[in-house]
Amino acid sequence: MRLYPSSLTAGQGFALLLLRLVVGTAFILHGWPKIQKPTSWMGDAVPGIFQLAAALAEFGGGIALIVGFLTPVVTLALAINMSVALMMVHFPKNEPFVRSGPGGDFELPLVYLALMVALFAIGPGRYSLDARLWGRSAHPVLVSRAPMRRSSAA
Image (cartoon, one colour):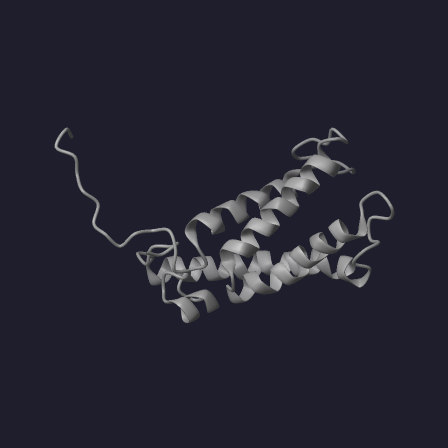
């Protein structure tokens, strides 16, 4: 049983690597200022432990994405992080999806959320530390290797 099937081609694996490199770097750059003041970067608005969790998710999660390590855990943590950012910051301000002028919008956190859901579902690909440690299909859980039976009703 495996979480991710090993049916991805080399080209698809390379595409996932490129995606992980770009998004992981973006999360590191977003997380770097937060990790400098991990329990106070939002002031007193949010308890320090939650600020620390968000800072670690972005900075550490970015590093883990780049190397493709613990991808299901990291993508879940980052998806939660982006969901909280949307709910606590962007939606309460009634920001538009995309703003053409100055001011905020919620495009970027929503795109990051969608990318984390996709990476959670697809996996890190063959060019990842997960694939090296646990085989090409990554983490040993969930997807059965048993052949699927076709129903005679079809």
